[in-house]
Length: 209
Image 1 (cartoon, rainbow, N blue to C red):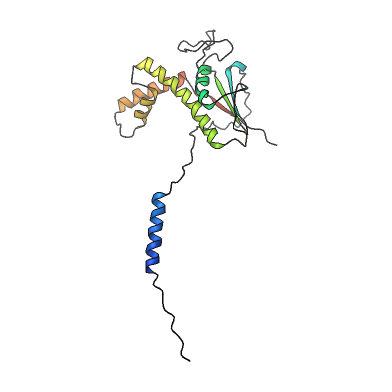
Image 2 (tube, rainbow, N blue to C red):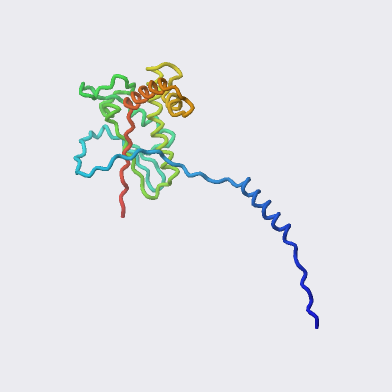
């Protein structure tokens, strides 16, 4: 009995359809981007270093628990209010002694119960392992924005309207700007502003079970 021939299926059109579907998904699919934080880590200390004595009033405690609840100085706070609270702490200027504690440019309440000077104001951030990463990044952004807002204010006061810290920093980092004299002037100004409001954010390690 003669064998029956099996008809061949033309798969050329299938390849075209698969290619079109691939292009469709590449064009329409949204790829999530992870948020990151730029931080300069402290240098490694090989020898035992005695930690400095810090007054309790110079520490601003920010805690995020496993339920993503924000506690600032042991009180519940909304994320939208964190920046303002941080600014009030950093810019308090409560120091009265001449030994580096009196802040002449601070515009805070100068409360004796809050930070003495921006150079002594430390933000202690603690989060638990169950804290969501998105909230952690948002809190870091708000704390960083508090320092930026204070630097912008002082930049305008010292160098005039339009010369904010943010604007000068953008020009300084722009590779298209080749003016060496301008870069040097901006570098001096940015260092001065960073020195006036140095960012001190200490991350307290969470307890492990």
